[in-house]
Length: 596
Image 1 (cartoon, rainbow, N blue to C red):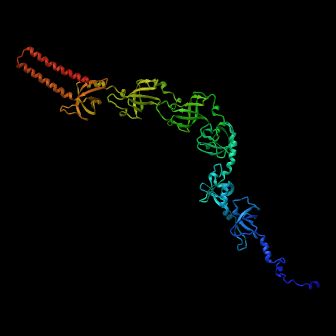
Image 2 (cartoon, helix red, strand yellow):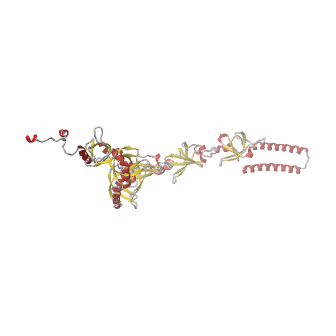
Image 3 (cartoon, rainbow, N blue to C red):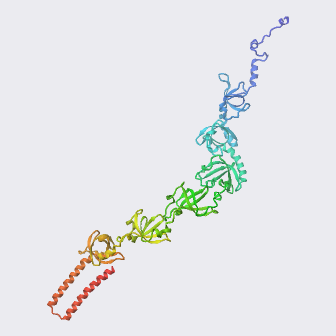
C-alpha cells in the first residue's frame, strides 16, 4: 500500500476510454482510425465492384466487398443463377455506402445491367456460352434474362426437336449462345439449339456413316404429317411415307403411330449424301399376300370392305393389305357408261367373285355382276323376235333411240321405226330420255348383245289403207304446216303428210300459197314403199282450164263441120292433128310428174 501511495498518476491518461472498455495506448485515436481505414477497400457510390457471397437463404444473399459492413441483396436478383453458393464471386453495384441505418446498400441487378451490353457483345464475338433465365412466353418464342437484358429466344431455337408445350420452359435457367445483336435497337437474340447442334452434328456423322439399306434401327416419332412420319434416329431424321406405314391403306398416320413413340424401322433408301433417309415400318412384318389362303382361286366368292372409290372402279380389301379391284364394267350387265359411285361407297361391305388372281404380281380383279345370271344367255327365250315389251329410253342419236328393256338388255329403235306416218327428224321430237316406250323385238344380235326394236310395228301399217284413199288424181283438203326451200309439207286427213314443190303452190290468182293456209290439193304421185305423197294445188285449176279449153275446141269443131264444106280428107287431117295435141299434153304432164 505504501508503494502505491508513492506512485504518481499519469496526467494524460484517458479515463473515459478506459471506462468504455477501449484499449489504452499511447497511439492517438485519429491514428488508430487512420490505420483501420487503411485495412478497408476504397469504394465510391454508384460504382461496380466484385464481392464474395458469405451467406445466403431463400430470401437474401449476404455479400462482402471488403468494406466495414456487408451488403444484403434479395435472392430474386440471382434467380437466373440457381447454382449460386457461398464463396462465389458476384458483381454488385454500390447504391449507398450507408443508408439511414448505416447499412451498405448493394444491387446485383444494376451491376449486371451496367456491364451487360459490353458482356453481351463480348459473348457474341467470342461465341461464349452464357446462362439466362426464361422469364415468360411471347409471340413466336420466349423472353430470356441475360445479364439483366431481356433477350429474345425464338421458338425454333429452343431445341432441335419441335416444341409442343412452350410453357414448361418458363422459369428455367438454361445455357445460351448470343446469335444476333441489333446495335441500333439494342435487341439481342439468343439460341439454345445452337449449343446442341454441334454435338448433334458429330453424332449425325457417326450415324450416317454406318447407314445401310435393310438396316433396322430404333427411332422416336418426332413429327406426324398428312403424308408420313418423321423419325429421330438419334440426331438424324428419316421419313416413313404413309404408304410404308402399313400393308393396308392408311388415311391418317395417327391411326398407326403417336408422337414420342419408340419403334423399330428399316432403312429403305437414302441419297448419295445420306441427307434424305427413307424408312419403312410395314416391311418388318410379313406381306399379307403371303398369308393369303392358298386354296383361293378364280370363281370363288369373297367378302370385303370398300376402301377406295374411283370413277373407273372400287378397291375392296378382303384382308388387311390384300385388295382387289372391281372395275365399273364388272358391276352391272348393263353396257351404259356409269360411275362406280352409282353402285357403292367407301365403307360398304360387299360380296364379289374372283375374276383374276396373280399371286406373284399380288393383283386380283373382282366382279359383282357375276352374282346374277347373264340375261343374254337366255335372250331368245325371254325376248323372242316379235315379242312386245316396255323399255326405258336411255339415249338419243341422230339415227335412233337406245332403250333398255332390263338391266343389261339394250336395244335400238331406228328413227324410221318410230312412226308410220310422221317424218321424225330427231328422236327428241318423238320421246324423251327416261320415258317408257312400247317396243317390239325385230332382230336379235347375241354376239354384240344388242336388240333391234321397233315402235311403229305395234300398229298396223296405215299405208295399205292410204293407198286406196290417196289415189293419183284424187283431191283432198290440206294445210301447209312447214315451208322449205324445195317446197312445202302439207298435212292431209288421217294424220298423213304430203309434199308440194313451189311450182305446185301457185294459186289461180298467181300468188304463192303461204304457211298455215288450207287449200285443196291433187295427188299427182303416191309411193307406198317410200311413204311419199306428191301434191299439187296448181294442177286443180290448170286441169279445169284445159278441160274447158278442150270442150270449147270440141264445140267449135262440130260447128265448123256443119258450116264449112271441106273435103273429107282435110277434116280427117284436122281431127288427127287436134287429137295429137291432146295426147302430147297428157304425155308432158305425165313426164313432169315422174320427173318430180
